[in-house]
Image (cartoon, rainbow, N blue to C red; front, side, top):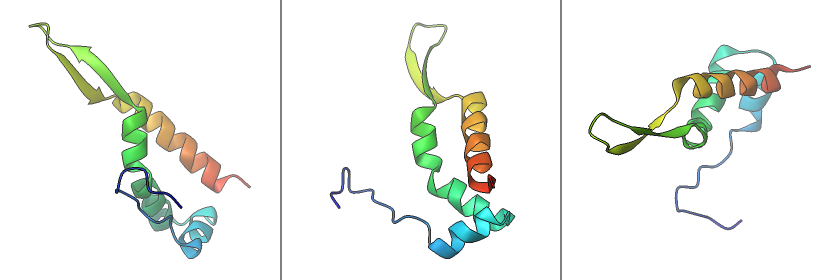
Length: 77
C-alpha cells in the first residue's frame, strides 16, 4: 500500500471493529479517534475575522454530524 503523507495509521483491529458493531462504547470511541483527523479535514471552513484576515477552523456542527453518521453506520444491523 502506498503511503500518501507519511502519517499512515493502521486500521483498527478486527476485534475492535466487532466490539464496536456490538455497541461497546470504548470500541466506538477508538474508531472515532482513528478517523478524527480525517473528519476534521472534511469539516474545515474558511472564516474572515473583523480585520479581514482569513482563518481555517473546524465546523463543530458538521463534525458532530459526521461523527453521528459514522456511529450509525458502525452499529447498523
